[in-house]
Length: 285
Ligand code: GLU
Image (cartoon, rainbow, N blue to C red; front, side, top):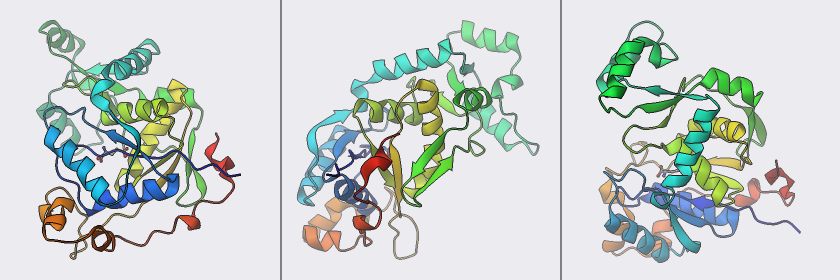
């Protein structure tokens, strides 16, 4: 008998849930027969407890309950730090002491930006900044990582094909920010491993990130889930919904008197049967 994949819904409590989030939760729920709820709260400067409470409340109202206890990225900082240490031991990351402004300048230069941004700071200057207590960001040595990983691929359930990891849009991506000592990319890879997620469902806007995640999984020797990137929910002008669309937040829609069924009726059609075959061998690596 086919077993349902383990899915998750992972909102960041930096604002109210909108219809796009509701669709993500719906897809995770349908494909997994339920889902795990993870609160992505590593960016402590932007996350607020009241948004987390509102997330619980909205999901319950919509009839999209999660399974088990919610998990919090802020409880896992040690695990992310261990993964970064491992990458350091393998010499797959390097410290980057560029400030935000310097980085913007490097990236906006008319010539091809250097892949290894450490080349633009002299070793002396980097040492001076380190000595003055400046914490670095840590960047992946992408070329070396790709070589080590030997052409990794990920399973794209949207197209039913295996996709080769393509890092051309990322270069030496930051795997640990200087302020929070981790990054979205590193954290979610570790989270999905800890939570035993076998199918990552999320919006198309995050498809590019999947290349980074799969590469990190390969070099950290972590099992790879399958991926399904769903359509984005757009407003009437065809713009993708963002947190600035407060009027379309679930809480506003609820306050205007809409029922859960009415709110869910705004979401695109989603037929899980189209992508999940009874043969779940696709979920093994
Ligand atoms: N927390 C991320 C967001 O709200 C989603 C993370 C993920 O699904 O990988 O955009």
